[in-house]
Image (tube, rainbow, N blue to C red; front, side, top):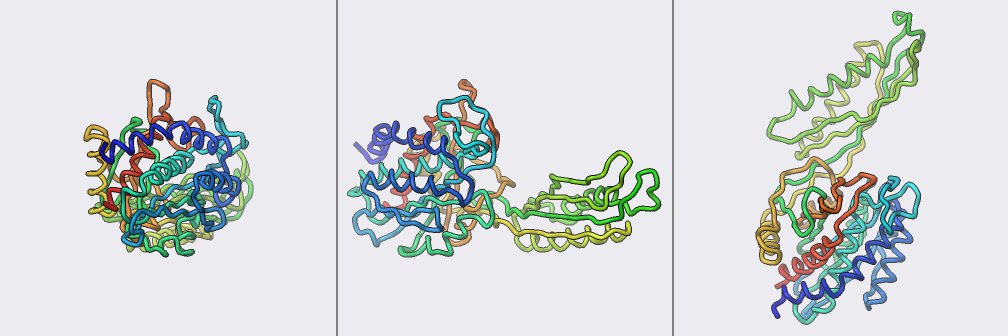
Length: 394
């Protein structure tokens, strides 16, 4: 039997254990940087199979799987383990038992796929040269991002990582399929916090007030000019205000209005310019209304760039492993992901794992209280991670 056949056979052999691992994580989700029980569970399961996990970034874990000649090359596989503050609405047997917390972004799937890949690779240690570094990473959903913390603690060193691979669930794609995008793939993501301060009073006497509501409305409208008239049209950019609080009433103009939003793009120079323009527009518009404005922009994750050569190579590997009909090309996305930090340091490939099954009603997007997966995707997730690692080490 060839290597791909062995990997597929092992993914079938370990499938029930991989499913049980995922279901346990789904039942016991924990928020970013609070994944203490999750880390304990993963460590226990890995130890049962003879692995020796090393703790990192408090709730992260790293394991080395050494083949023959382990110093030859090291490839890293990464999965995130944190959940989201969402109340699950599914009726399955493995529904979240932690009220208000849910694995609605598939990190339980990512971790289970990596766990499965490790079980497969452990059985094939005599089939490859080099080392596979397996990373269970905390805090992807929350700044500063667990990836940045693990990098600071040396996760890409000792041994030095040559390439890193990550995968993410994709509810728009059927289970059994995967998608790739070489080059720029995901946007940087920054948080914008704006407080407009005016002078509150009676709504029937606006001439005696400085209206922060009207000022905020003009700020929102003017901010859209940054993308429509200042950004280079060839550079993807998004500026959205998603939260507005003005605690007045039908006849009360409030003293201040608070707003939150996001700015995303794929060019670092333009990113800095846009921050400057956002601040200037907010201050300038507020001044023209007689109000003042405080702007706080929190710089989030950088853009995610898939190394072109590596991603094309792994797409080729996926076609050989899964068949051309199960490998698709993806467009860029304006969502953010802290895997981007790895992509800034070493050649990286972040691809998508199909989890959809319309016949079973598994159609909901990530960050939705009814998100779930067709669990046969775990076979693809585990086996392809193992195949990718060995493809790069061959």
